[in-house]
Length: 235
Image 1 (tube, one colour):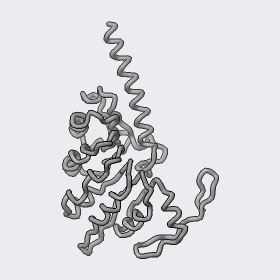
Image 2 (cartoon, helix red, strand yellow):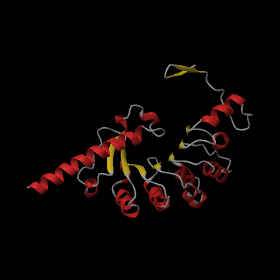
Image 3 (spheres, one colour):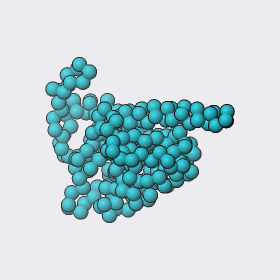
Image 4 (cartoon, helix red, strand yellow):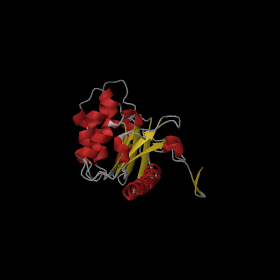
């Protein structure tokens, strides 16, 4: 049994591609608004996505494309496009790149309602290829990217999409150096978070915690910058 907030939930039976979904699984999937798919076969991921029509917050990591040279990327993309996603955390573009698939096989313009996107898992070169397409999403207001990507993608994003409200630079280790001296850090919309600061760093990529922490830091930074500017004005 799995316990959550004092309520016991019997575990669902393991689901594999080709299985007939039980009525209970269909009911659970129909109510799901958040979904994390990690380390599963692409075929399994597609069938789960097709069952979860009401998901708004999706995280997809480390899908297994297999070795049979049959890449069901088009069907996977269509399953994602069918959702009215508001938040996406995924290295999907990188998976496709590693499988030698055309980048156009995943088109961000099919995600018009997306407001939050996390690109933490993308290689730097892949991020640069994807970034113009990501920034073309009309509703996008929040981004998270790895500190390993450096400052240039952040500066580019701020310039190309002034409507962005928050950019989070994520660090894996508390010992990593923060980029406090960079010019763009004077913008209160850019904050930095060590993943270890989150209460559940292993599943930080789905749900509110990363974004809530980022918004809190943005407000604190804005207050600090305003105080500094007011002090300079008085002097």
